[in-house]
Length: 87
Image 1 (cartoon, rainbow, N blue to C red):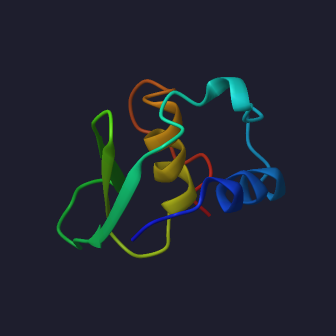
Image 2: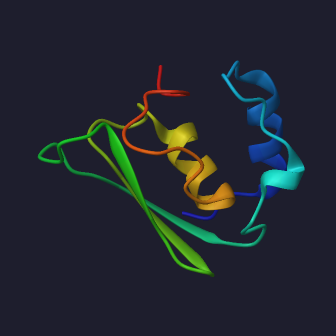
């Protein structure tokens, strides 16, 4: 699934977060995002990131989708598990 960066930025502006996202946080402005669902994972979601692609695995779509997309664009911006942006 390809996601347009403009649509992502519009989505970010509509979500209340502990840390307001900034365009300065974007490390991977151009990336291809693949989304899949696996009910057996231990967390609500996880993002596997490379320089050009990002694979998101969600326990239940679309819970935590925005959170994991932020990881695809901004990298690992928190330590440990977090439910920020998930609900």
